[in-house]
Length: 103
Image (cartoon, rainbow, N blue to C red; front, side):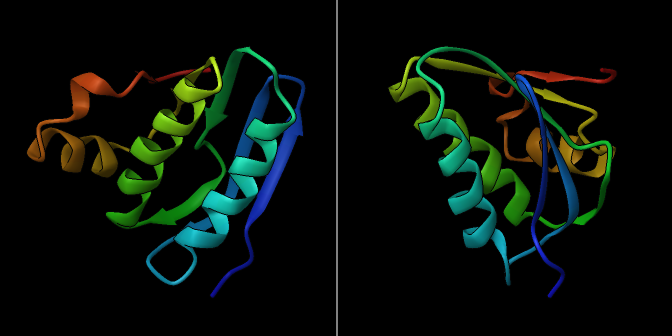
């Protein structure tokens, strides 16, 4: 299991490492901690430095959206890997995810 690494720069959080079923809970805990420091506004989650991700990353993304919404925070996902977009499309949730190709 690779460690969870968040690189926080203002309203941007870069995810570095891997997201998989063995560490998705750890990712959620770290990202929830980031959300708890924000009162409202916009938060960018950038996947550019992510090395690998499985389907659990999609669960992370949708859960994070719910948590952010309940806190009055809007999330934009940047540089989401194409395979995660395809999984989201397969499950019919791609249109629900605020994904942008480039930062």
